[in-house]
Image 1 (tube, rainbow, N blue to C red):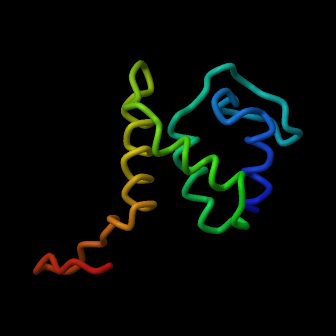
Image 2 (cartoon, rainbow, N blue to C red; image 1 turned 90 degrees about the vertical axis):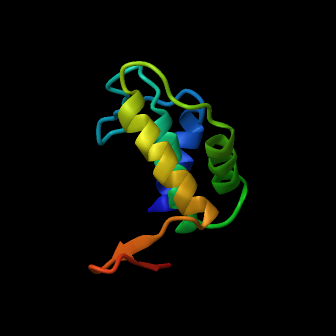
Length: 101
């Protein structure tokens, strides 16, 4: 599934794909979502290693801090995706705040 999602979005253009599509693959908006790029980069962990997965990861690393109307959601997705891809995403569990990961 990750290969299919990354392949479709890469075909639309990593730096320009729309943030919403119909099930038939038709864009429902003209807005490009940095948060969607970030989340799709994380999907690369489940995808076949190769140039498409690497391109999404590179786009995540090179992404500027989001601005504008959707900056909170896009920024949180960017932050969490960077933490996940860099190996710094940790689960804090229990009353003592033990860190696992």
